Length: 150
Image 1: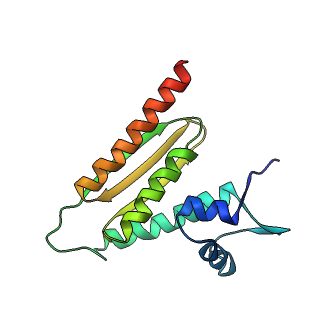
Image 2 (image 1 turned 90 degrees about the vertical axis):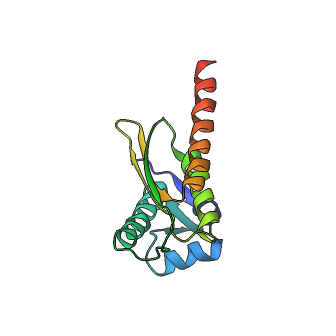
């Protein structure tokens, strides 16, 4: 059985947080990791961590926590078929994490179904922000199409 491991600095980059935050997630037992010289995180464990945090965000959203009265929030589901969901996931997470500081009503989930090659992104937020995220998805799709077509 082969595992792909990620370093703390790479996990911080993917999550859009500091290395200190990643180490705190590990220390609290929220993120599984193994000390192999330095902390190493299995890709699967990082995906589980992201999924768990996303599910908490959905629950908060569904119960109306953090909503701003009078704001317009929309939801979209993106099913993206690819052999490698990592680049798009990283860019979307970076966009979401940077926007969360200014727009606390953004919510998202991510799920990868390896057998079908489907990455599913469920996103809630202001229309202008979701339009920017859809632009990111479209650019990735065009790039993959050019790469696979050559």
